[in-house]
Structure formats: C-alpha cells, structure tokens
Length: 112
Image 1: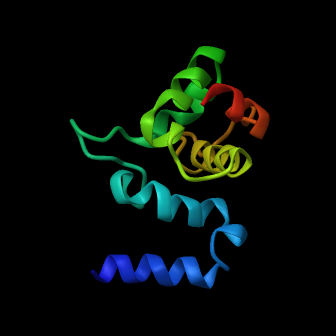
Image 2: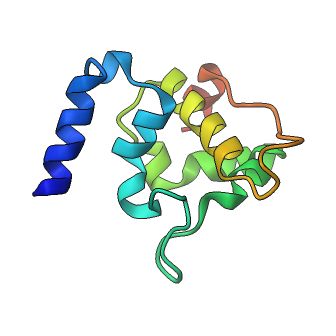
C-alpha cells in the first residue's frame, strides 16, 4: 500500500504521464521487478546490466523489444526509446562508456 501511494504521488508530482522523465518511467514501469539498481532477481528477473550490449547489434535490439515487459509497456514509442537509452547508460557495467546508438521511436514502433 505504501509503495502504491508513493508511486501515485511520484506520478502526480511529474505532471502525470506527459511530463515523465526516463527516470520516472523507470520507477513506474521497471523498478518493481528489476529493483532500484537494476539488479533483478536471480533466477526470475534478469539484471539490466546487459541492455547496452543488446542495443549494440540489430539482433539484440530485436530481442530487447520482444521482451514482454518492454513490448507491452504503456509508453509511447518515443518514451520507451528514451527509457531504454537511459537504462543502457545507467546500468551499464562500464558506466555507459562506448554505448551503442539509442533506439529511435520509429525503430521501437517497427520492432514491438
């Protein structure tokens, strides 16, 4: 109950969905399963440290957009692209150095 209230207050404080940042989208869309540090749950939810690696190849990009939680996210294609770019840098083991090109909204639309 407390977590639900905190998320609702966060959503309201950012002006609802229209004004949300990738960090807020992460908190609302991903953090519940992957955790605040993107570590996931061993054996159940994968860590997000490999997202940048997936973005580095066309096959990885297709695979990333096929993940049910990504494909079915209630975000626009542009916001999902921004969220995945943020995740790739935020949780990259090397701190995001040498990151692959970010997805575009058009690419997200085509792949999900």
